[in-house]
Amino acid sequence: MAEILDAIFQRRAVKVFEPVEIPDGLREQILDAARHAPSSFNLQPYKFYWVRSDAKRVAVARLCMGQKPAATASALVVAVADIGALAATSRCQAEWMRGSNFAEEEIRDYERKAKIGRILFMPGPFGLFAAIKRVIFWMLNLRMVVGMPPLSRQELFKWATRSTALACQNMMIAAEALGMSTCPMEGFDGRRLREYLGLSGRQHEIVMVIAMGKKSSEYREPPQWRRPLGATVVDL
Ligand SMILES: Cc1cc2nc3c(=O)[nH]c(=O)nc-3n(C[C@H](O)[C@H](O)[C@H](O)COP(=O)(O)O)c2cc1C
Image 1 (spheres, rainbow, N blue to C red):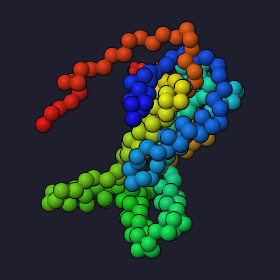
Image 2 (cartoon, rainbow, N blue to C red):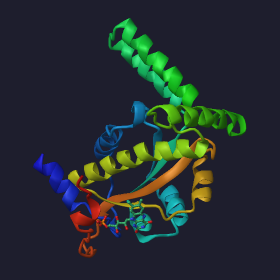
Image 3 (cartoon, rainbow, N blue to C red):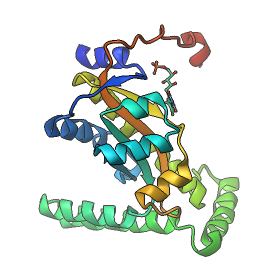
């Protein structure tokens, strides 16, 4: 447990890396840690594009505005919020439940809930279903305590981004624990990067790019500053 805390406290956004190969085993552990993060309804609404070939790294680094961490990283991981695979993911989970000998009733219950979730999350053509659902939820909320699900495409992306960001943090902590350093980046040309990766604007939104590698021995990070706890925490 203390090692996890060490990784959390030692992690810094490293700006300069030295060239090293990230072995496949290490890459797998880092990605495995990422996908073990919690996600809303366990729908894991994200994809990671691991960019390691020299030519592609150069191209992606250019789309990260040539930032130093991107230009020197051994791998660039593009973390993408993906709202296009929700039905496939819940089908996959149901199959896994069957293969893991869950009771038929439990599986049916899961499938029923997943179906309701899909209906709730479907924005419909021109956001029409979202508008109707918004009115229904608004009226319900006048009479009872009810949470508003993500209805529009924009809200769905916001919803998916939360789970994606948690997976990114897991990835960075795992990388740190395994002797690698990282730098999360939101400084990139989203439109061009999306096109470069062949992503669909309706289903995918790039949340961040994580530069990963071995910290350059010449790089000295500045002292780490955080707001005092009192400015961050509200005791009730
Ligand atoms: C969402 C997000 C986006 C960031 N974007 C960039 C970026 O584009 N370029 C960069 O050099 N650092 C970027 N950072 C790193 C932050 O500047 C860094 O985390 C912050 O200054 C605190 O430093 P520390 O992580 O070393 O404690 C980003 C961090 C986050 C969480």
